Amino acid sequence: MSERTLASATQNLRARLGDAVGQPVAIICSRDKHALGQSLEALLAVEGPEAVRCTLEPGATHSTLDYATTLALEVSGQGTLVLLIDPPHAGWLFATVGRPDTGLLIPNDHLYCDWLLPYDGLLRILQADYGELLRFRRQLMDVLPSALPLHIVTTAGTDLICQCGSWLGLDGEVCMAPVAGSARGSLVIDGALYEGPPRTPISLEIEDGRVASASASADETDPLAVKLRRDLFRDAGATVVAEVGLGINPCACPSGGIMEAEMARGTAHIGFGENRTLGGCNASAIHLDVGLLRPTITLNGHMLCDAGNYLT
Image 1 (cartoon, rainbow, N blue to C red):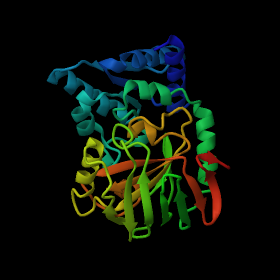
Image 2: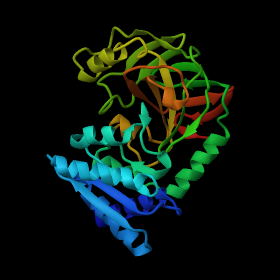
Image 3: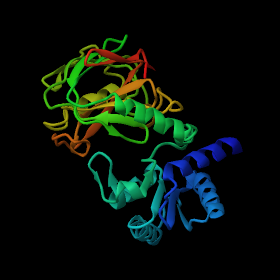
């Protein structure tokens, strides 16, 4: 990692926190993300906001985790909490903060969390100019009213129609829970699935808002295909089309893990399972996102995106 990469990531993360950043600021980071946490702490020290940093080492003791929990809860009520966390500390993260797919325990306007994104991916998405990203998101939200039919087509074979719910603007995407039962057509997963694309695209047929069948041609030797089949039928709500999302970050890698790839501008993703935090009404033990590359998107018959290139 170059100093320039770290500096631009720090500046864009600081911009994400906003001008009215609450005080104090607590930065809790896993060891592998320590450099970014330290860099943000130094930048805030120059500006004036009080910042406290806690680094979680591998195999952190109960006393350290308890201190991090106390710090997070104390700061989140009035200040700003920044969490840069790796998978070994996922249990602590979810117990303290909650999950974006099932509900947060800390107000979102007091929180920045990378949600276990690998460090290289985190640095990539933080290379995007935050001001430009916000402008693009606003432009997109302006042309995405709810209660209109959305049609997504890809050269891989996706041909999916649904009725839009209310759109939400998030850090790396705009998304909505489609009207229950409205999704229908073919979905071909050619983008990210869990930690990367499947070996060969996987086809799903969608009827009445849920998966009706999966392609018999899916590569059963591909661990990602096996995991998908297992997760889609984990419970009665897991096959429901829960989300349609559009990536907005021009620096995210569309072929990486799904947490980064779903943010990539020029991609779309479809979520299955739990969607009540998105404004839907479906309950499930899982929320699973699958990626689509270079989608052509039309809204109420008007083209919004042509093979991954936005016309707005």
